[in-house]
Length: 599
Image 1 (spheres, rainbow, N blue to C red):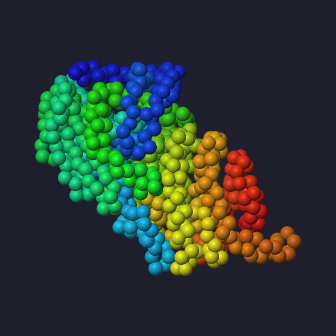
Image 2 (cartoon, rainbow, N blue to C red):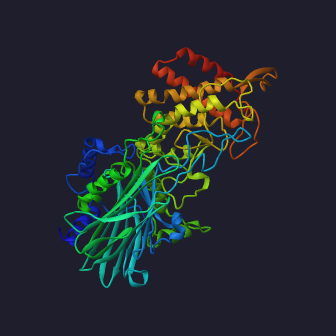
Image 3 (spheres, rainbow, N blue to C red):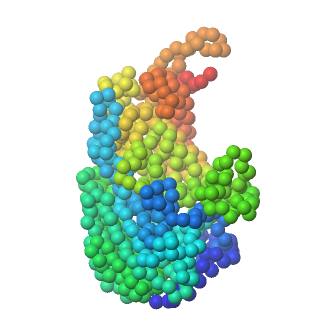
């Protein structure tokens, strides 16, 4: 194998050297155009990965989160640094003596497809029926003798410009570096340990299941020292899942050791983590694909990534990531030298202090961090929910679900406005994959006599959903009738940013079904016209509630009236642009004209 010091020098030059933006755009443009493998809609066999022809140029990082100590595992959700490829993600601690990676897969969901209503006609909201997003696994990577007391110059950083995490420190005069990233092209998480100066690594890797799993470790036949540990399992709802962790060393030895493996006197070490489920966004298949074998797939993907040199693996990831990240630059001004010298936590505290001066580079980094989370959390798998792609336990607030009253909509306000339109696709695909079940659930259960929000007319059509939704077509907690209009508002705005009739045709059934729901729901009442003083008939929402506001059973709430007006307007325009259902669109226009709006 090539000398790891030489590799690191080449890598550092490629990722820190002078920027040639034209050359970069040529490389990423060719990469994106030529690579159909960029789409990974779920955990499936991918096409062979094409690597960039040359290393990606880069300038000094303009946007970095950095800290002078490792994250505490007990506070990992707040202190850990997130990596992800839109499907699989990890929160990383960064302690060389024993760093933890808390792994998640966007489709690792408990719960069922069947809808269960409570005595009040609202949805059951338990992990047994509705479910929850849960963790996939934990990985611990420990290096002997690298405790905090034995190292100096420790730095833990998340490079937003390049899309990867780095831990660096010195021990006995030797520089050590860990690079951690989640590759979208290779569909795996990689951790590469290197050093310059004749040092080495000895320690262990342990894999912990989160659902009663028992990992098994074994040697791997490989040109270099290697071993792996893995497990597979099935949740109570039938969802199959698996995780595989493989390590390849530049020298020394790697040997299976019970449920994990040990590495000894290695000049470098690359750890590849891969896992997933057999979830499929297809209601006709019950959202699970029996043909997918998650463990076999995880092993193949891990081995494919391990065959690639660590610098090329990282460079492939950086090229893919920067093709998205570099679509927008942010410059709010220059911060002071004193501000730049502070680590991110100290800098945030200083900025929050009363009377503090502006810190324009920190504020630009804050925006770019939002873009980083969008790229790493929302590529072409499921959309991001209340906690994005990252968890620190199997018990999360609000099940880490999708909230249709505003939260999922807020997650998807950013992509189009921040140069990341492709990151909106998971939201669209999710809504389309759930539509048949949402329609069925609405037809069967919305007018349940126990539901205080039911249509008093007795009519029902189209679709709405629960305020909480899972990935199996079911709802949780309360009915929020106007949630469908708010989802459609996001879908329509994405069309406005990216006018494509093909996309409009895809979302048309969602728009029309939501309009049909409201056609069946609106009530006629009379109000006094403030201009003339005479009475006139208007249309208002039936018994409803305004999330986060109240009351719980009012008619004609402003929240719903305005969302429905927008829905009707968007549907009419979609019908006109596509030349579909023009008669029905005219009817919706008549209803829209009669909607009562705030005076």
